[in-house]
Length: 143
Image 1 (tube, rainbow, N blue to C red):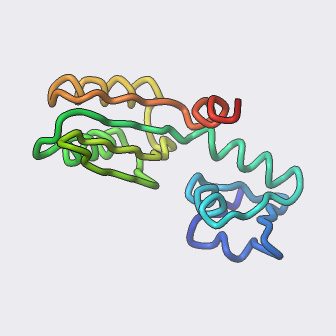
Image 2 (cartoon, helix red, strand yellow; image 1 turned 30 degrees about the horizontal axis):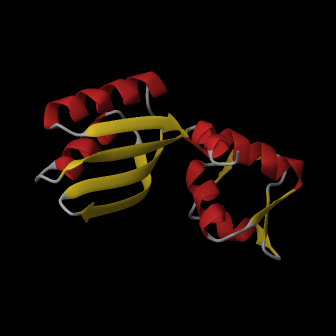
Image 3 (tube, rainbow, N blue to C red; image 1 turned 45 degrees about the vertical axis):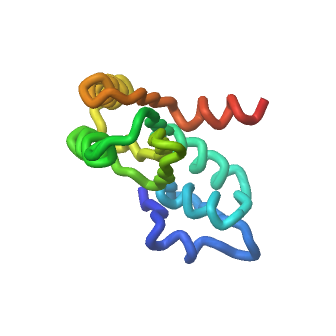
């Protein structure tokens, strides 16, 4: 099976649509590229590849009073679990730290292991960390 990644996804775009040919699958990074660039998915192969890619994504939210080391602690746990941060937004509002990340869990042992590890980090550093499967998060916001 050959994989479309963020590095080669542009080769599969024609007329604003991402086409996934037989024998190819899509990495979560390619799905993120398609979403960021407003590409439509052309054909059932592209839709199936997108569904498979999003199954390995999680949305991680972090919130709490700002203090040094929050990003470092969360990112270290994600890396230690063999996951990859594919997108991140962070801000501080009136001293409240808020961060949202999209994490590719392809290399992790399980969603539960990642969520459990991040939950422990949150308790240790005094912030709230929520981990949701991307597909669930996406469905919640479609209703």
